[in-house]
Image 1 (tube, rainbow, N blue to C red):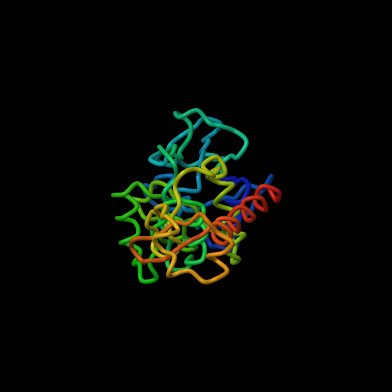
Image 2: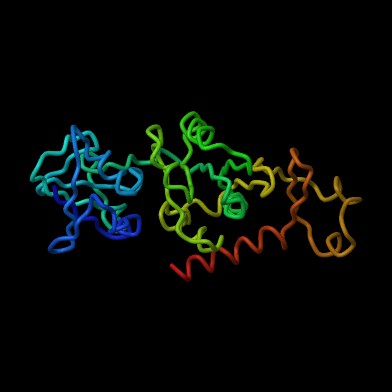
Length: 251
């Protein structure tokens, strides 16, 4: 069979694989044995299924369960940022609400950034892959990872592979992919350390814990009941606004 991958999906593929042969017009000739689904074939080449939005077989859409046949020609597309596919064609189910995330152990700084913007973000530095997949399924979370093998697990429904090493570039990737700008600002704030929701607190209640300049110059405060951290306007919140403006300008 022949396959053509579009856009960033090509970054997942090693063209030197033995089962691939590059042929005309950017297509690969792919060799396989036995009864195989197109999902199995795509992932065998290194492309996680949550990154595939559309598969056309001889110009007609098919889903991941399609059993490949000799002579089939496939066009395989990533998430299409500027085109909204009809539900019957799209292989990426629409996320039902404001995004919630779970991140692998390599993305601790990104987790703090997402929490800063008020997004419910589960993260631990000792997560096991199976645990991430199970928690994502039970809590309806989007998996963010730099591990392709994790994203290829059968139960993974919503996920994104993170390309960049720099945490701010990672944040930009996620903001663009899931259109997160539409959710900020809102009334929800989260602790960057533990992900708990912050509550508003009266300055008088925490006065004895504040540094002299903080007492003098700031009036609005929020508090994390879980880890006992205090946030004030002028630190956490103004820096978040600056980061958002930078993301919007870059985009």
